[in-house]
Amino acid sequence: MFNKKFEHFEVNEKWSSRGRTITESDIVMFSAFSGDWYPLHTDKEYAEKNTPFKQRIAHGMLVLSVATGLQVMDPDIIVAFYGIEKLRFIHPTFIDDTIHVELEVTDLLDKENGTGVVTCKQKIVKQTGEPVTTGIIKVLVNKEK
Image (cartoon, rainbow, N blue to C red; front, side, top):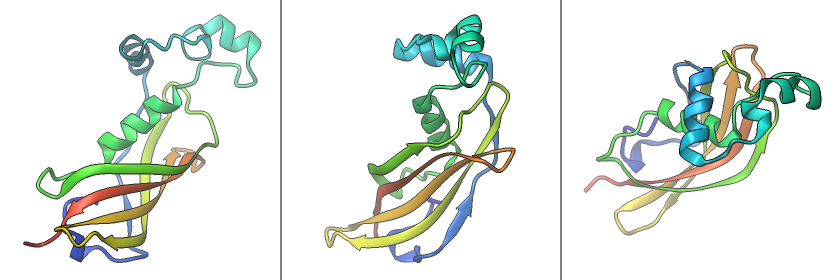
C-alpha cells in the first residue's frame, strides 16, 4: 500500500496483504525482546485453567508488529509512522493462526511541506475471517517533488 507518493492515493482505496502464521516461537521471541512474560501468553497451564481463551494467545503488540511487517513500505515514500487511533483488540490471535492486514484509505491530509498524511482503517484478520484488531492508522508520506 505505501509504495506510491501522496498524490496517488485515493479515498476509499482498499488493499490487502499476504498472510503470516503466528508461531509459538514468535511469542517466545517477542516476550524475550519486550520483557512481557505475562502468563496469558507464555504459560500453557495458566492459560488453560485461568483464562476464557483456554489457551495461550499472542500479545496484542506482537500482532500489531507483525501487521506492520506485512504492509508494503517503500523507504523513499514513507517519512514516518504518524499514529494509531481507536485501536481495539477484538478477538484473540492463537498460536498457528494466520493473519493478514486489510487497509482502506479514509482521509488524505496535505501537509503542504512536501508530505501528506494518509489515514486508513486497518483491520487485522485471521484465517476464520474474524477481525482480531481494528484501528485507524496514519502514515506520513512524501509527495511528488
